[in-house]
Image (cartoon, rainbow, N blue to C red):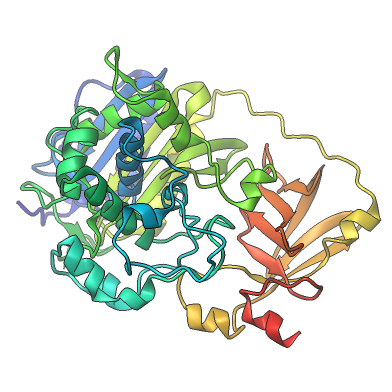
Length: 472
């Protein structure tokens, strides 16, 4: 059934909690209700985790309950990573296995022959791929994996050495689903249902269309957006209720345990929270993309989770593992600004009574050493627009030394960097290392972290995979 009634007309009388919310969160719920009403959102769902369990499970909207399925977009990537990690638990694969051992020949191309794509690179999005082509994104027919792989095979080529850096891509979950089918002998959706969704107590969830979805709408809350089937369902097709998603969050916050039963190995949960690949992580980067989850800093605290966009649905979940808190929010309008506002409001309330982490202290480093990091840096990766990236048309960044401190500048953006030693830095307000300068085996210098991925191009050695280096 598709909801076509404006949130503004139904919100106040159709709040649908799974149980009465604790008084502790009542003010937040009122604030979120007003925000949804003012933005004309037809349906919204919320989970608040407190003390390692769900404290609030609630929806708003006509004919919407806590059992109503929503679309979760790229939050699906956490589940796809879990599916591959389940194969590891079953001792069918290892994360250090080369991808070519578990996938048909010709599915992808890696010109960096000495740097194979490993399975761990798939789940951490460090395999060296850009994103899907426009034709792959824009098609809207349900496809089998064989049909999806035939759509645009020329897009599946690594553009920089695998394992070098994170680059967000919807291609790599698609390749992960190919591995899952090849190794398990089951369809991706069947394996996901048996080995991930059922153990997480999500029996009604699916990567296929479900009856009862409230429909996705443009930001006006009136203009319906057709169901997006997606070329590779593994990157964003999860449909599930907020009640089921609350169990998923419970498992993550309780080290793989649900209702006293271990449903995920500790090693699997650790892989979700702790990134292992990229030069930056090896150099001490604390906030990065792990297996289907990533970190961000909010109010001096590091949250870990993922966001989602499913053509008419916007969502996000964020966890504070050490505090046993977290949240999940979903709206069925394509309104990223509203989602960001909801996210900020929820996160500020989650951390309001928590002690703020003490930031890592600044470390004195000689000006000569800091000066070695200064110069011009070109983006070392491109999610879209690879041809423009190769042509050197993207905006470079500058690292300068001002008053004994490094300054990152790109366009109108300027960010001072607080020195932590050994090439590690943080932005003001960050509690941990969020930016690193690191050299690869050839001596090329890179910036990795919350500012993006860049390579120094005005001093040798300049990375060979960046075409600007050919003319310098």
